[in-house]
Image (cartoon, rainbow, N blue to C red; front, side, top):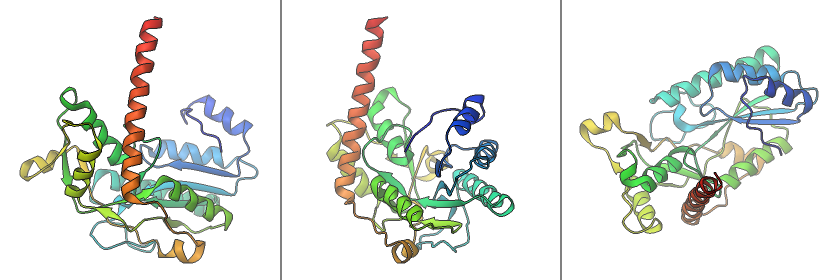
Length: 265
């Protein structure tokens, strides 16, 4: 697997697609725009041996508390969810009209090694806690329990789908394991350095302007279990510990790198 950081709208991206004849292209819809998704799929169409385009979405395209399967009607309640619905619709229109091998893989909140500030709710929550008084005071709007899945389990699910030549429009990979916010915050308090100020649950008017949202509908992954032989194996408690340790190690490494760069200057 190769990862590229090029801006899709630049000539560098065209060079990458011209030089690499990929079998599988994987990309997140998070932070994607319609123009960038159009650009990605237009470049992908030129690939000679492309077999799968996997686009990651999330459970925020649904509302309600019941687990949602692949056939459930989308009904987003957040701005992010509404954007994901539009992008999913755009991607599947490319599949229908241009015969591109697109599959939308919806995932819950991921945990695992390599977690950084910008990685979903978990990364944003830890960044707010780590910044403390230096960062903006953060509050959390609570929708319900939050589902978590190991990043390794997610990667394995995608690999199984590719191996089995899955061609469906949508695939759900969920763990069925979740935390209420109080339990999650309690775990974080035990794992973070003593005295760390955690983002607080918002109430009343504060909930209308909350910076973080906790809790999305769980994803029904029965199809992945039955058709792909996939099931999650990661333990959520170990996962939270691994994620926090990885996040703090990354923060420390970034700070040391900044100091070294300053000294070099």
